[in-house]
Length: 297
Image (cartoon, rainbow, N blue to C red; front, top):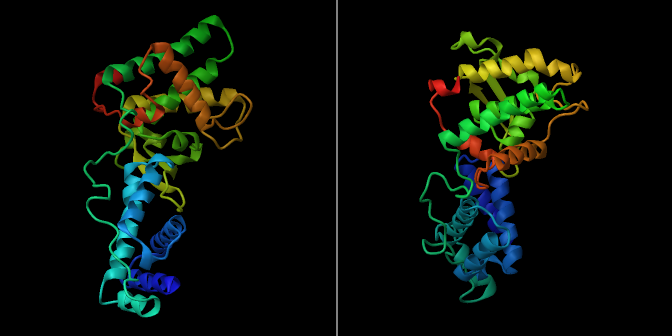
């Protein structure tokens, strides 16, 4: 009976024009819920939904937006089963006896409401304008100090200072930044003044669960950021001795800079400046500044 229900729900979703990459994860989620409850759909209750939601929040520590999406899938399956037009209640009572039929397990009192456009961790707040300016200035200062002291690390410091500017200038996440290649830069006919750095092709964007990375093109809008990355590519990167490596950000040992290394450098700079620990690399992406602000040139 359970398998028949899933086949019927699949047919209904297909009739609505939904794609396979939407249907399959939903079906997988329903099966996981069945395993969690150790019951079949004709014995599910709202209490099962409450216990499962608590499990997602307290034990798996999922974000409210993720929990709401899971609840939404189960709500749709539940509403499909209780719809009299499909006859599942009658079929279950015929097979399993009176009272053995699906009920609506999701309602407004046990599901997450969509109250905010931004449901991320409130602790991971964006930079303020002053904090962002101090952070980028400090990153540049590390380059100057290494050069004056004639010590190793000047190239890496320059690379990382530029890396943080690119994260800000194009609104990138840590992993997206680390996976950039030289060939990801391209011209933008609408902004010919930026030359080969007018457009950035982000090939490893954040993916939905069970799907491949999402690609997007980000137009360059800040002349100072374009100037910074251009100087790094044309005058600094070659000094690492990795001419044949495709990565934009390379290491002294000829590898690609990893997200963990970006995080380590970020934490070192943040703590040296005495900035709040609530600031994380993702806080750079959330900072908003007008491209015309001359403080950033």
